[in-house]
Image 1 (cartoon, rainbow over the protein chains, first blue to last red):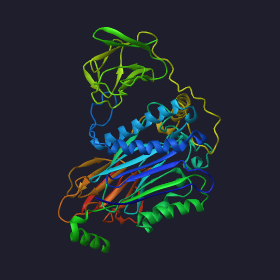
Image 2: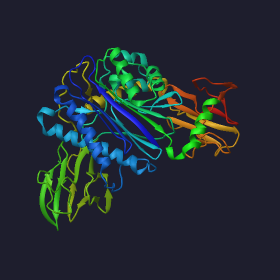
Image 3: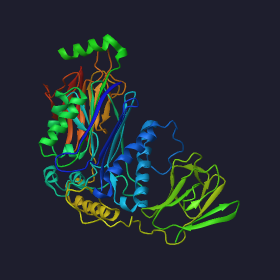
Image 4: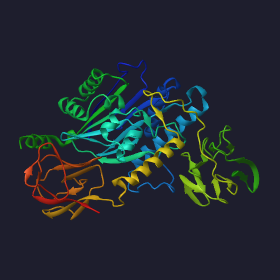
Length: 271
Length: 241
């Protein structure tokens, strides 16, 4: 699978510092986005740590060893997915440790949404209220669940999505990296098809613009860098109350398949 | 209070109580239980309380952490267990009152509305309990779990029934498709079904499926009993209890 991707971050229109961090390692097919929190307590330190630590863990040659005894992890996960989860787990612990050791960093934390493509399998690990979306044949599907209080209340049927959007509790997270020595990590695997588009974004995007606007932008701007720029512009035009970070990645068939796939793509458009 | 005793060849090296901070074990001297041996990683493992249980977790050490004879990544500890790290072992004495309340001890400042914050363990537990109690009164806790299922009526595919357990379901010829179409000239991804918070949505892929005889445009929300047709395959969308 070939990848064309772009990541962009903007401070927004209200805040003075950007606490988001992101990283793309295209050669590995690795995408990481993290939204720091803790204000003066170094939210940007936490998000930068998350991105660095996960990148290093995934880049290292070392194979994971040991067996999982306690955790009821589905055994059919690929080794890559397990590794990504371990990377997030380790990052959580080290951020927690740093926050405990350094008094000025107490209370820092971060969300993380990370995706790793190998062959055509996309591994996803996620904590917090940043999001991963997949655009496939014009359908935008959120791949992650927000770990926020209001999202949990919606899932339990206690409040409506509309009430959630108006709630003053939107910023309350149930899970984040660095808050506790152990964190529950959502993990998923998704099979990627040619022409799928992956979007990772911080809540500075999704609180400003709607999903139909996101879907429309990703369809209209097929070049990832242009799509990323357009999304940030739209979020700023709608107020830009928080930092906005997006990663857009487009997956294509390997060019080695040559004219045959090209021809099929041409014929698929006709019918 | 529960305690850990670091032993080397049946001699006691060091003893530490387990409080509400994790006990760290490793070669580096700043660990709570430093183990001076080259087979031990700098930060090898840690032991802490989680939800009233005592847990040991290997910190990705090179040579592993063993509880009794089993190599573990994470395991619950019981009184009398031995944690083996290299040639040292650590005896677990959990006889004293086990569940020391686990709390980060952090004071959460009054929440500023625009600042992101995380609920601490207790607040989260209270919230979830409250939510669960309310949920029991709502229709969500009716005790029946409904699983959306595709039942194949006719056509060449690799199965008869497909429970839709993932967020993304693909109908197509791809070897990874959930519903795998057979035969020549079938598209890799003919159509898709997306699971969202409020239901299941059928969308186009390389082909346009029909629902109850009508070709769809965009996505349509599926209802119990809908008839879906795609690439010569007919199937029912139903909820199984």
